[in-house]
Length: 203
Length: 184
Image (cartoon, each protein chain N blue to C red):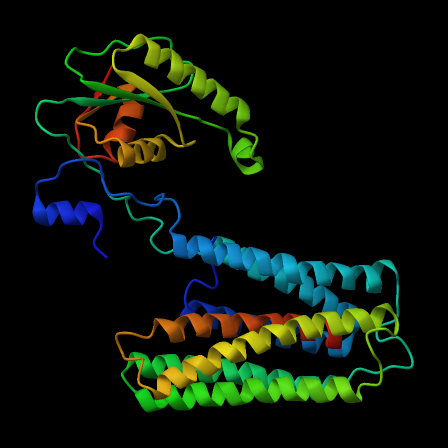
């Protein structure tokens, strides 16, 4: 979009005040993203604070005996989710080069891997042997992984619409903003999972 | 500080950095849990430092210069004065005057939102100057002179800006606008 100064440069004459405009310090898009990140940090931060108090301040054993966390299944799930970030990146790079089939394949693979992650997590919940009511450890475990799972579900919904739009030919080398935004969200979900995996399963 | 989610490419790059950090933490935690915790603390500090050090794209670009003018027969003046300015004498001929006084605040005051006193100072100055000048009204501006001028010009198309301050302040305003800037 041309700036006001550029407009003047081309058209010369000008009367009246400059067009209504946002502050030059921060654009609405960047401000929106900052607010989104801040709200997510506070949301996840509140759950990590609870985790910190339960495990460090209160000294609750992690995991509390006799329960065990399926570290290796979660590791495979982590690999699946991380790989899905590579495929969504590939999808965006493809459409930037005008490769529509690369976009479709990339988004479809991403969606399938995200779905696999969510189903595996559901299976993990059903076999893990404890419920949220079984003490502070179990509550925090379900809260942290469940909160992330909700984000994956939202991401999958976005990916579904992106994939449908890709197969209907809505994106091109010039117009792919929808893929860009969805990709950012998916990477964010991936980063958050790595943090959750490290704190809940590894450390 | 750079926003790691500004674009998909930047988010992907951030993810790669987090993956590398995670591998280091997993490796350290495999040897000893506390070593893993130490690696995590170092990794978080390192990533935070990296994000803070990264230059923000476009931050070094000069701000677009603003211009405005009014219909023939009118001469509108935007007077920029710092808080505490006692009186200002303007040349005759201004048909309308807007006085804008930026509510300058320290970094701590801005960050904590404790700017009420600074705004009150600016408001008193704006009201006093507006009473002294014919056809004038006063406004409190942002906590940055350039931004206060920019905001004022969005609502008030001025033919001229008069700065009640030193040459440094006038030069600061001049760098942001294309309309004439003079000192009172």
